[in-house]
Length: 142
Image (cartoon, rainbow, N blue to C red; front, side):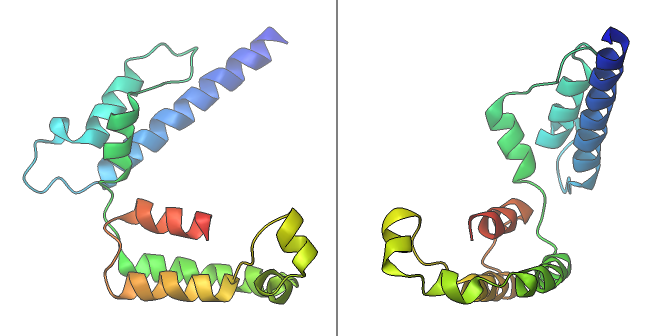
């Protein structure tokens, strides 16, 4: 049992390190030294931690890393197009937009799924998002 837990911890640590390294490698380092970039610092800090613990880094450094990933408009627009079939499959979008009063009183305010996706798409096309993180947050907070 303990060896299974240890293997899971090692694998999760390896996956976390690979994820951090891939973000660091994908980040443009225009006039910066590679070691000075926030994502490179995250990768180095995570790699320097013991194998048997989940790596952690300073929140500001992690935020600086994740917000340094540039927005690729074409990829963001493809992502938005790819989620539309799943939302079309969701049969409650009309009710979410115009829910009964009791639903609004007890559960949540109205949500216009299609209008929200359209707003996000328009902002991507017009360059209103600074990075990938902002688009992801907009999609997640819908």
